[in-house]
Amino acid sequence: MGYEAFEPAGELLRALSAPIRVAIVAELGAGERCVHELVEKLGAPQPLVSQHLRVLRGAGVVRGARRGREIAYSLVDDHVAHIVADAVSHAREVRS
Image 1 (cartoon, rainbow, N blue to C red):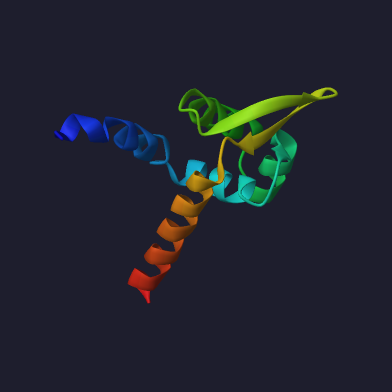
Image 2: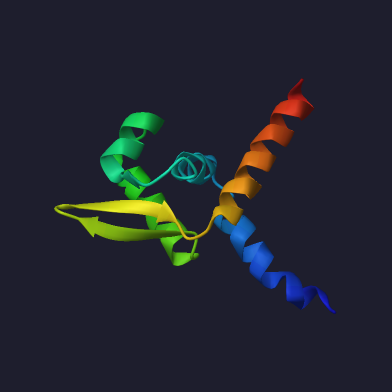
C-alpha cells in the first residue's frame, strides 16, 4: 500500500487545519447548531463562521439541514468529533 492510500486522511486533516474549524467541529460534536449559535459560542463574526462551514461541508465533515429560515449544521459522523477531541486533549497534555 503506497502513500496515495492516505490521501483521504490528508484531505480530512487539511480541512481541520484552521483553529476555528477545530472549534466548530468540537462544538458540533455536542450536537446540531445553527450559524448564529456557533457565532455566539465562538465569538467569531458570522461571515467567518459561514466561510469555514463551507470548507467543512465541502470536505464532507459537516452537513446542513434547513430548519425554517435557518440551516442547522451537524457532523456527518462522530469519528471526526473523536479526532478533534483527541487532538485538543493531546495539545493540552503537551503544554502541561
